[in-house]
Amino acid sequence: MERRDFLGTLSAPVLAACAVCMGACSKSGDSITAAPTGVNFTIDLNTSLTFAGSWLAQSGVVVARLASGNTAGSFTAVQQACTHEGVAINYDALGTRFVCNAHGSVFNTSGAVTAGPAPRALKQYSVSVTGTTLTVTG
Ligand code: FES
Image 1 (cartoon, rainbow, N blue to C red):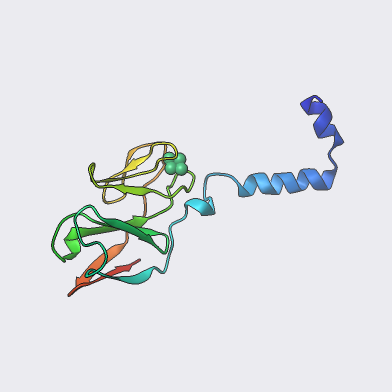
Image 2: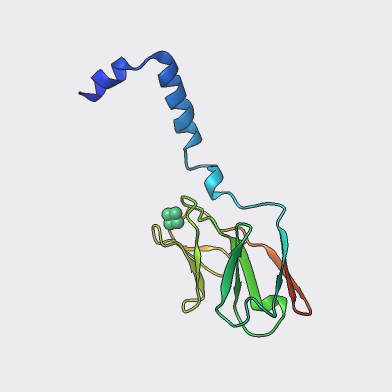
C-alpha cells in the first residue's frame, strides 16, 4: 500500500492522536533527557566510591570519584540521562569523562559536551563531604 493510500484510510481521530504523539516524542524538551530536580542523597564513603575512578548511579545521577581524598573536589555528579536521547551515560575513568555508548556523545567531568550529538551539557549537581559522608544535591 502506498503511503498516500494508507493515510487516506486513517480517520480524523486517529490522525489527531498521531499528531499528539509526534509532538510528545519531539527531542526538544523531551522528558527522557530531563535532569532530575530536588536531588538530595548521601553516600557512605567507607563502602562506596572508595577509589579514584569508581562511580555509581543513584536517583538519576551519576557520581564519580575523580581523585583520592574525601573532599568535595574529589567528586563530581551529573545527570544520568544523556541529553541526546536519554540513554544512561557511564563514567570512563581512563578518559576522565562521561560517555554515552548509544551514539558516542562525550562530556567532561563538569558535564559539558566535548563530542556530540548531545545538544547540551549534563546538569551538574553540588557535592559536599562531611567526614566520610558525601552529599549530592541539586
Ligand atoms: S542517547 Fe546519548 S548520544 Fe544518543
